[in-house]
Image 1 (cartoon, rainbow, N blue to C red):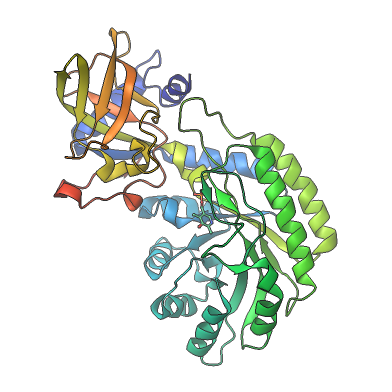
Image 2 (image 1 turned 90 degrees about the vertical axis):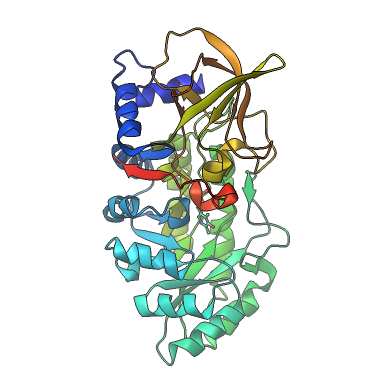
Length: 401
Ligand SMILES: *Cc1c(COP(=O)(O)O)cnc(C)c1O
């Protein structure tokens, strides 16, 4: 089901075959493996978000999801700011003509070099600890840089990647937040607000809404002990995309309605606060496809293996090796093969590691060497989180079309 609908969006298996021809032509022109991202789908996704989120809620893009320069340039005019995690990500955002003043630098373990670059760009620094605030103040030499404080909330977002609740390296524990806020007040820093990020990649609108309502309440309590008004409240994000069999899309309309209620309530309790969400995969993930060619089709003891020219060295997350979900797989299709007889195959990458496997027992149209295999939902967290040096195979090209 999922595979079919995604293929239809790219028209790979659609009646016109136009999408298949387009992808095949791109692979011929640029070689494989290849990432292709459709710019129009980024625009469409931003328009969807704007249509459902409450007026005035800012949307920040998390650069780490996809830092391709063309992507940053395309998203720059459409979002309200970028969330960067390092000096190098900040430089990419600046190179894409994003003003430093709408950048926020978040992430544990910022080096002095990262803080210096944030200062020079006039970016907001989202402090992960009071010590970081002291280092920033020293580096600022009397200028009062804008800072937010990241809080490790007492709750978490039930999702693939949990970043709140319990002991964490992220932020300041909520029970220590009052002391940290007082500490910030004693430093030459311009406190602008709070940042609370409870988790990532959640497909349940209700869970996200619950986490954000809890976030807003926590922020309203902390505002009473903050060194200044909360002018910005970053509610986090965690909007997921369906990648695995059985997963369905996030009910964005329902989430939007709930966030509308949240915005009304926050307007009363935190009247000076601008609300933000920060999103990565939800913005770029569905717009991308990974294209790889079948190098070999081999049969081993009755099982058919398709060995592709790319694997977890480019797209670790999709192969499932990262979380040990070998039997689950991203939507995969053989480009231009609609109508061929189906067969059950194991789709592998070329690496000398058994976990370099895209999918097992997957029904696909019969593929031969030279056929192009598309892995959908591949716009976010691809090469950046993959062990690309493993076996030193060539890096994939990346296109925005
Ligand atoms: C990674 C990250 C994001 C983006 O997460 P997605 O799942 O890609 O939306 C947002 N905020 C923070 C603080 C992050 O670490």
